[in-house]
Image 1 (cartoon, rainbow, N blue to C red):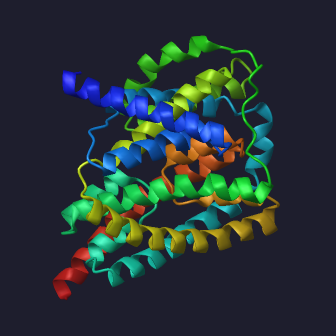
Image 2 (image 1 turned 120 degrees about the horizontal axis):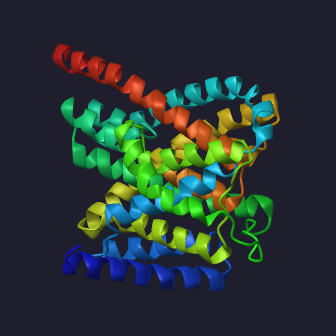
Image 3 (image 1 turned 30 degrees about the vertical axis):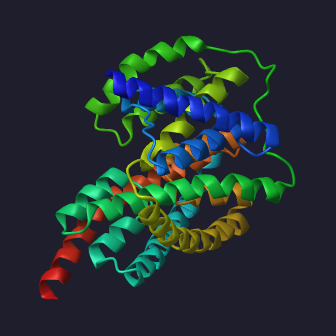
Length: 342
């Protein structure tokens, strides 16, 4: 890491710490994730160089994967039989919400390729690359995708907080750390995930490893309260620092467009979440978080931090990401034919 990158990281973490402390003093939900996120968003939008290196972000995602996989229990198999219907409703909801958001982006002046790939809720890197190959605007797709994730992460915790009438449950500060020997395994798991071409390998390889150990009741990673807060502090800072380099005017215009698109997507997906709740008895907050149009890493963070059935949530977000990766090439081919015939 060069000197400039080190200074940018130090600034990002310092502003993140101030944001986390402020949110904690104010009693806001998820203070050590949303505080650093908002603080870094504000200073990066004002032109300050704040950055979290990709290597550190991947390491923190790896820790999150171990925490998430450790939620798997031997009793989980009995619940899986209820999931096929929720999987079908998820896929239908993704299609409907993508169409609604794409229609809005078309009204904002996006070309059809950029509108569709900006609206697909997940697999952001793949959507940007495929959209560019089809003649879309990669910058607009990237910004729309990033802002959607940011808005979902910012909006959902306060909604759940108000819904429940109290702050979300925090991890038990007195709970002892357990099986910390799993952490060094990340040095092998993340490269293995890349070699196996797993989607989001830094998250999924550790998740599968921990799920296997926890599912057979061998070991389950448990971080102390301060360890969870440090992980959230780093990940929140990484999300908020993505928007450096955008002028204030362009940022606000893109934010308005993305806010409407995200509200449309959330409204459509909330209807499908209600169907899952009524048909399967899944709690509304679990169903909504499982369908929410955020990234798998960000939604996994919320599920763990808010204690909202993280295994159910992560499984459905993984399914959505895989489905998008499979469907996107066919969508790209169709959009190419449309542009040629048009």
